[in-house]
Length: 334
Image (cartoon, rainbow, N blue to C red; front, side, top):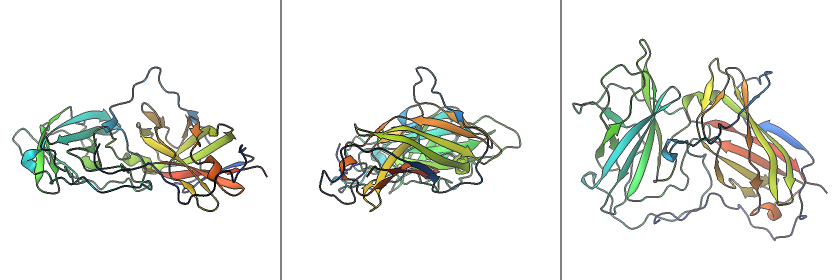
């Protein structure tokens, strides 16, 4: 794939190998959220269990990861796509509080396709814009992004259509490019009609084929996260991790499939933003109103960073779009 050369994360500094003992053991794990969205709940956390043989939704309908430090190059030396060189298609899929949408564009001309990350316009059968207001993206905690976003002859843009729609069904989507715009036919049903309920369009994220294109849902702003870490094994890896999500709102909050990162850093500030991007859940998970939900995480390998962490303690960070990051402090033996 041409475009940016990239990595998910990088070392802030490099130190001589072998500076630490071969085995790290966590003597204490203190769990502190970076930001709390309100007082913690006393209700015990429900535990998420993935449905048997569950299949995640198509990747373009998943939430992209949080911002990361990346190392990249420059776009390939190709001309910028003109609207007449671009074709596309768009689709809607049911989701919490409305539907999620994805517009996929491509160009056989082999040009650089640059989509503006602005709210798309839905068009009726007559080609006129439907009266659906655009709403600012509330994804302000770790805004979703494809950090390894490159410029290619193909791209996608996600969006969230919230609430209700009682008007004419949309038939197409207009997407703005850096120069001009493209109209793509649309398939899928709009949100169901609920009298006296309003709706809005919220922009998602841009990405390449095979990347997530959704931002965090609006309700995620009511969530806080708390990370637990049991131990560091000799593999080495982080073992026995889970995250408790607390909801301070009066309504349940749905977590749709989203990417998360586990990062590590020593007391000198050296480490990685993200060991790897992983899918939090294969399907939807509900955090109860004024309640909490526990989600267990798989072990995280530290093969690339383990021997270079300095000092007696290091910090483990859980990060995902739309939710304040959470940390656990691991202390190494003397």
